[in-house]
Length: 411
Image (cartoon, rainbow, N blue to C red; front, side, top):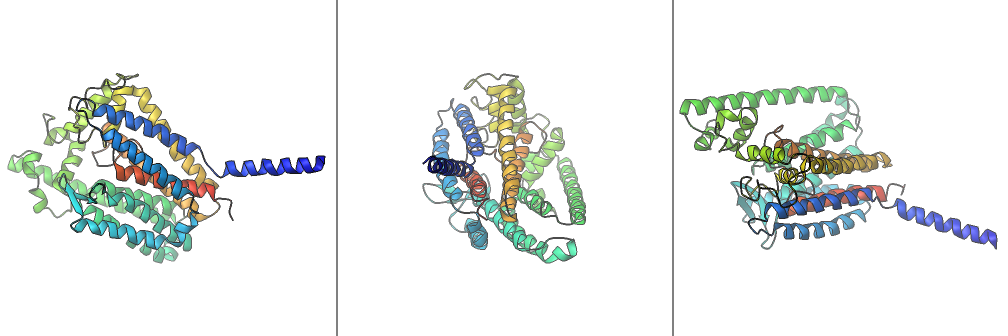
């Protein structure tokens, strides 16, 4: 009888252990903390004007939670088998922008209008491209550049199509994310180091071309005696480099703001007000709903709840609040890389590395632009910035990571 009891107890213990090992709790807990911080900051940024975007954000998080659970319950190898169909769906969504469904806001055609809801397909394209590139690398042998040339050409074609479609919207920020994503996936696939040296050389050459173009833009402004705002749209008509003038403004504002906006009331306004908000928060901040830069409109309502949400947080919660959020985001990335290490095969590992890379790029660029170490780009902060498309996509990305964790032992 005692043998039977111990056998039953051992079986029960193994079942409990198996259930616990099927679910990673670190990521969802951290996601919840970040979501709560985001809701508070969005509500604070709009409290003076009586905005209700935080209510919409709450709804997006509810939908995102459903997406997270739904994606995590599906074996991630299903996405390997259907990566080409998922990628094709992502491209179709991008092409729909050039139909009557496409909606133009702030001079960019980035949203699909479905009546009650609008969607930004450039965000879903990140997932579709990640899965497609990961599937190619999983099925292909990667070694030296010569042996890997066919694989690299496939990946180049897969990445080039969404990047060109997103860049033409125009959306330089979202298109930028694809390059470190692919670079990271190739790096962990043990591609020859010569490839990365070549890529670095190409990148350096591209930076040099941008520098030449920006110098020409600056000379054009001086010759015509125009401000950046007055000249907007003129230089792009005669330039050989495929940048829009507002993108040139952002770059030169970062490098030499006094050259295009000496009084700080033009193209450098948002970043200057962001620096004031971050600096005025001090160590402990002014307190929730006590910040002034966003509430009084110095940091415009069009950017405070999304691209510059970290500025609102730093003003109201101070350095400690900013470090807490950065710590949570770091934990999210670190735990995702831990799950990548636990993955039993390449596709799961590549998914997690890709998700971690997307998060890191968004965090570094977004926080960097709010504190003046990066040029201003339309890249939101994961789980904090307002925006339905990005919230849903972040939840789907983390759902993929959870799926890798759940099914890592099923081999």
